[in-house]
Image (tube, rainbow, N blue to C red):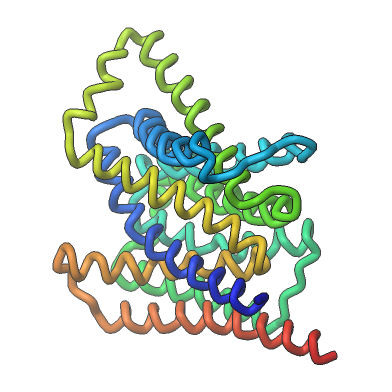
Length: 309
């Protein structure tokens, strides 16, 4: 039974990487039609509405009585509030390539924070595999001429802080997985994101006298489709599955899967946009895959060894 749960967790981790791989593209498309705050608001409107229906109908059970709500709210300030706010403003000031490079450091930051707060231990081999996956991402972006530009320093700083926010979420969510179900954590996070971004966005428009601008993006099908993808797939689905994953495997082991999203972005560019795939794309992708597999293979071997012992 435990083996089945682990396999499902790994399957969800790969699925999330695929979803995230497309999210940068959809975020850029949405930002072409609306401001960062309005984009976030519509994104979480979609998430909240879609999850509220099964909760209200009783198909999904949530019960927060006697549970550490304060810590769960702290979790929501890291993700979605902190992460998505930093990401959307960061991508407005920096390039998608810079976003990809900085996001690749999430496993390293997570490993450090998890070792401090969760006392998670990683072997030297696992550390090397994590750094190998990060190097694979950085190698791809540098070879294609997408290195970090100091002129985009503000955006780079905001994008780096997204890695800290996601790492903090991963660590805290793992500790809360014993008190809450994945659905309970997910619904609370979606509700907090929906209420917060809606209030901030509408208040800003009312003060500036631009309330009509809030509804203008709805005239664009591209914007609507982008927000539906970002809200349902990239926010709701990944949140629910991430909470499940973190109840089964370590935060550091899960976070390394995020680098697979780079491979998805390359494949999407080739298949959808006809972009060229070069030898350095292949080399970088192999390094990423080896890093992800190596990190989690060492973990499973460690678990088996403990059982035998």
